[in-house]
Image (cartoon, rainbow, N blue to C red):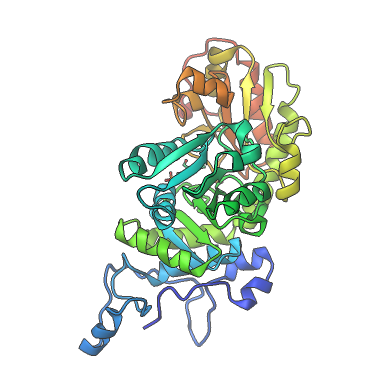
Length: 418
Ligand SMILES: Cc1ncc(COP(=O)(O)O)c(C=O)c1O
């Protein structure tokens, strides 16, 4: 029986290029008629040969598979691959991005401890830290974006976890990770980075000083909008073990079928990201200065407030951008309804290009004051750029922008042209 949780990037994987790790890490195949693809261990439990074996596996850390919530060989492959991409000691794959954050928070904090988190994080993270962890006696100090330039002002002896997201949703603000790590480490806290928008293809937080990196693998890591999954990677193997304990105990394990889809998505991560990021750059250039657009949020633009930070710590500027449509909320709605190729969807990171409308989705619960601080308004539309032919994406944006002021009836996909 194969051993569970024997993770860590093998020296061979470490030396390989990123594309090779995407395809091969965690999946070495040897022997006659070995499946080239990873088998799905579609089982909730594993048969054991005898009672002595059972006696052995109940000892903590024996590393055998016995119950899928505790460990599954298909999921272990996804974990090894992601650890190899992020350069960590190990990875815990979870049922969602939220369960990945929960596992890391429980592994680093207990009642009486404090999390220091930037305010510009995913809405679900705000709810988890504020409402759920608050009930467990773990408090959160929220840092406005201007404060993230010097996080040390917010950290104290009580701080055990510093949490940042970069680039942020939906205004693509970037955080200097080296400086955030310095502030966290000065008080003995761990720095955790939500790397969902950048992916390890464009940004490696652990190499910039972070201790933990997490993903909503629902997004670019999975890449095909067909799974809900999360991943959390740490530099330190003991921390990985603690996060695994927390994930197993809170039932955050990913189903092996979804783990298989995650593995398959990861194989093409580098090529998808390279293509989509190039598309996004071309689209940002097209939108900047367009007469129907009052602002483009994209860290790749020299005019963007986060351009220098992004240039210093990312290898390209990413697949996400946002725009403010001239004419406010009504114009933004007519623009979205006029799109024919871009889907309106409340997620991101798939091969298909999508738009979302933050004031009615990710930020629907924000007060007017919060929206102002985050620079989000009814005019703001978020774009997740896919891997389609860029000319088609731009042509669709162009025709929809031309209609941005008029009162068009709701579009139906049946009469879509593409
Ligand atoms: C940046 C970011 N982090 C975390 C999450 C939560 O991930 P999930 O929906 O997979 O739980 C999301 C979801 O949209 C996200 O956009």
